[in-house]
Length: 114
Image 1 (cartoon, rainbow, N blue to C red):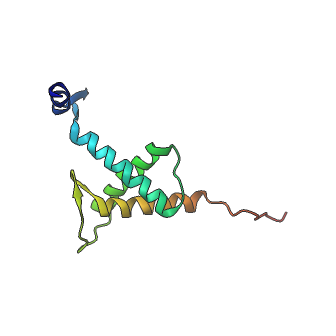
Image 2: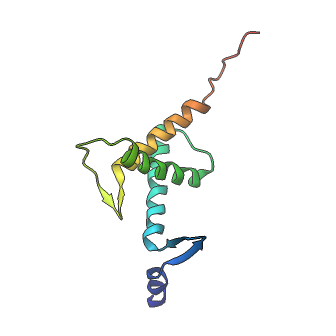
Image 3: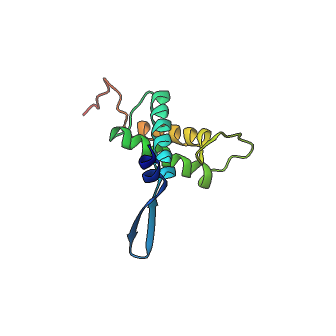
């Protein structure tokens, strides 16, 4: 158990050019929470995103960015879990799933007359 906690405590550093990226326990927990929020958003809208869980993670991450940096709603109480605003992430992910569904949804039985 001590070895596992030591491995998770030290982040893995990746250097690309002049940029250094650290992947630690916080980043892993952030991705897990994003996956859960994305999956919940898919269930609420009753639609799925492409690429399964990876698509759900991407939707939740973009949803967090969308609702914290682009669309800022004042007075919205939020619950933070490991730095992730859950309510804003869920709203943003739902918006993205709805947009995806609107762009890709085809009505069944609809045929274009030629």
